[in-house]
Length: 404
Image (cartoon, rainbow, N blue to C red; front, top):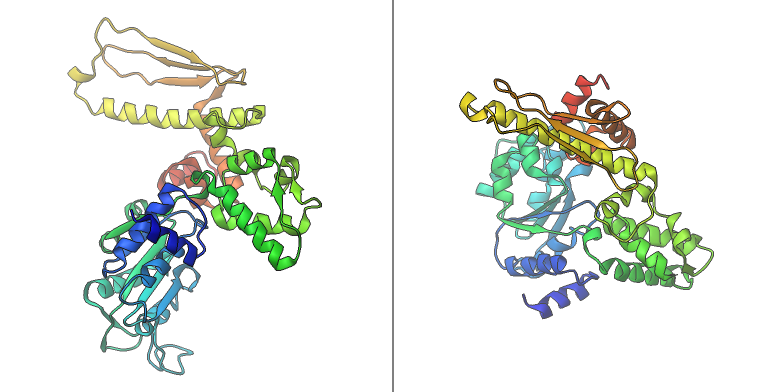
């Protein structure tokens, strides 16, 4: 890694941070820039993916040509083909003039397709043709046009999962993913969080003519422990809010907490890992227990399916095997978890997992799904991601538990 080149790109594009994963992403962008290989940038929303294609274009042989950034998720499905590839006059209602598309405008340069997973399947097929042959056809035309563009794409979607669900073309994925670049989420960037806060506070101070915010030690620890679901974009937004609204220029942890939405939920991963926060409520611990049981049920189901697929000789337990009974508790929770597995001579008995107080795993699973759906206002895609299961599994569980 050429640290001087990386530092120069950070300074040029105002990228703050020294996280090794971030430096690696910038270094890969610099190395791949002189080629015409397609690049796929992955990372959570708000993590700063838009800086990578700018670095690639600035260090490429196409830097004197046009750079166009397109947010595929913001274009209505009915007009996306026209936006990308252009249209002929009269091609559809409202097409009063011929129009060039982005691929025509960016000829010789670079086009950045942000949120590429939001493209309709038909448009994905058109994009694949551009990648393979450099050819496209305007909407309402039969004439094949040529373009010479470098394509850089980005997404916050798990594309392999989208392929499995039939929402993204596998062949397009491999064409885009020639060079993968991963931008780390803010919560994994350590001290970069404080550096970014300091930068945003200084920017607000200059912009709004107010003294720059500072954090006391406890507030710094809270900022570092927060989960940051909105990543850098969320940190910037919160810093701007506090710069205007905070009564004191040195912010305490209690004052900071008022600006961190759903702080308690976002601290759960820290609590599970034994991190900085040691004071969590009973409700937090119960949430953790529910999550553990939810994952345990899935593992048990997988194990049963594997055992059921084995031959009778393989699956028959030996005479020396004895029933296994395990009792465990979660710290801070008085509710013990009892896991019991019985072996039989002819059958594989169901593994019984239950929580005392007649709290069955079915009830736990149903409750976790209801909580996730309520948390995300019924958005199943987000709920499935939160539960770490596929959307298909979530749909099946919703039907099974009559949660429509």
